[in-house]
Length: 143
Ligand SMILES: [Zn+2]
Image (cartoon, rainbow, N blue to C red):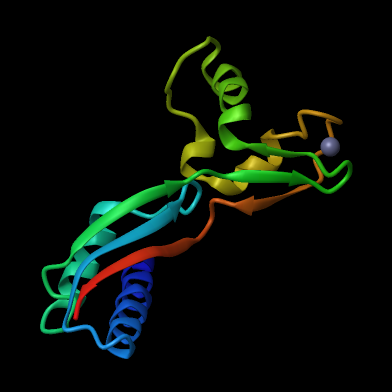
């Protein structure tokens, strides 16, 4: 139940921040979720809604944004996005140029380190610089 503890963190943060700002009610919250976070958004939304009950965040609109995964080569410093290597991966797994297919990276992002190489120098030594976490982008309140 990874989503549940993340939802708790989100609701706590939004409620505390809004109370500090003197808000009466939270109308809307935009939350950015990393492409590689492996979160079930439907369940996350459900958990946020459930935890918001009887707080100033009750009935707030929850909007999710996807944060694109970015990688940075530790060898040459080149940065690239998941979409840049996505096509290549799909071709590797599905044997043809397709938009979407069942591939293990989609389910197990940790495999990315096995399959992805720096597009510039070919080094397997890189870090995931974004696309893993969950961030609160904006909060709309009524005072
Ligand atoms: Zn490189």
